[in-house]
Image (cartoon, rainbow, N blue to C red):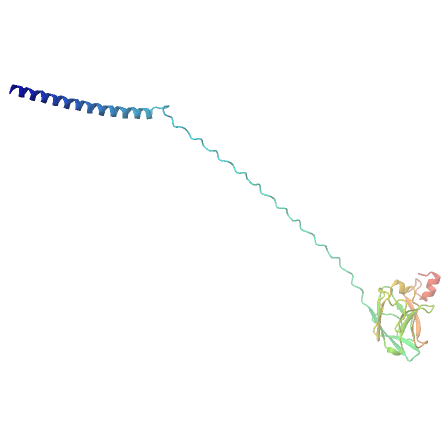
Amino acid sequence: MERRSLLTIVGTTAVAGLAGCAGTESNGDTQSTESEASDSEMQSDTPGEDTPTEEPTEEPTEEPTEEPTEEPTEEPTEEPTEEPTEEPAASVTFTLDNIGASAWEITDSSKSVGQEGTDNPTLIYESGTRYVITNAGGGSHPLAFRTGMGTVLLSQDGGGELESESDINWIDNGETVEFTVTDSLASRVDEYYCTTHSAMNSSVQIGEDSTGYWWPQTVRMLCGMF
């Protein structure tokens, strides 16, 4: 009986001791955990310990700036100024009519080329002027021009030496003839005439000489008067 009681007491004491040890260990573990946590916080707050490594920062690369290219400025081109061309002077027109088969007479002249109302008047031409002559005699009285020596220069019958010269530009339309008095024609022409009637002829004058009188072209050339 006493022995059982003693065992009971011993057992109770042992259980109590074990419970106390367990509580002590639990408290120790708790304090150890709190201590470790405190140390960890202190280490994180302490400068210099476990310094984080700084990652290298990449410096921005400067892209090359493109300099603006200057476009070549087009200089305005000067358009060539057209020089006004001198228009040729108006042609002088007149009519040569026949008086039967004996003479010519001048009518309807746009500018004086000789005395009107007379038989076989002298024709006065100006060098460089174009003339348009209406031959009222038609095909019965072909008009022609010749030198004082009889060389035919222009003729409605054809065969004149100067008819092919482009500057003279001889045009025979039957009823009318046209030509320009060039230097080559002015230096040689002396007479106009009808190729079928010898009485129908007279002289040709190129302007007037310094005396105001007209001289046949052949005489002028011989005397050196121009």
